[in-house]
Length: 323
Image 1 (spheres, one colour):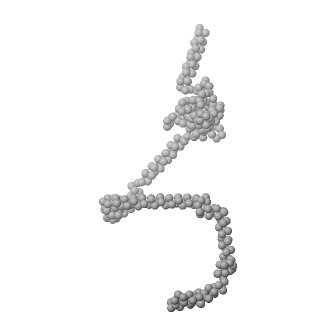
Image 2: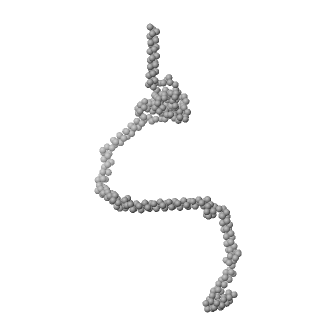
Image 3: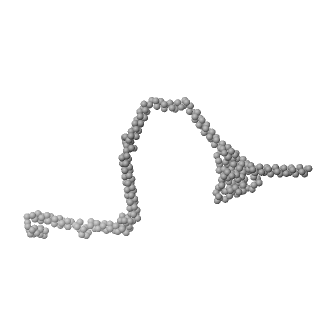
């Protein structure tokens, strides 16, 4: 009988353990029996993350938080991941929550497929998420500021703000009415095409003239642009030594010839000034000048009596005068 009770008790305990294991597996338990590896992630704030919270990739559970501890002024979270979880060296871990006030979990992105996989117990890069409590506190401060601002607009203060404006409107009501009426009249004339502004808006001939003027300006601008382009082409040709001017500027042989010509001309002028050569003597010889002057005077005297003499007499007179 004793053996039978012990056998039943053993079977009961074994069945209870099997059932507990199945229940743990179904509800996403500790997975202590599954093979995997560990990674470490360090955060400034884990936002109520706790041991046993899930680790997910693209929303798919791939492990859970195994340990939380302090390390180097940060909170270090030890993650146990499934063996087939594709975590790479450029993957990043972020603490997120299910909904606005749901449970926290660690989300890991895939990273680059070409990057190597993280090895056992290595640190994974992290991305800090804003603290919801701080955001709520800031929103509360903003709401308090808005509330204080609305409280400041009491009836008395509104009257103090709008009172001078109301008095100004009352005092200048006739002037403002006249100004509005003038504006209405002007706008009506413009709408009818009257006046300079109205003609500018509605007169098609004026529009055509303006359009033609703009077209002419555009044509003139195009011509100026063509002229500038042609001038630029000429300058480029001159710079490259093309054409007469280009050769004058760029051809060294022509430059040397021009220099030699100027030197020769300078020497000739110097000789002329010094009275050398035929031209120099003609320019500088005083005797030649005197002889030429005397000859011209004799010719002048000879022509005075030509009107009263015949042809033969003229010839004789000229010969006697000159010789």
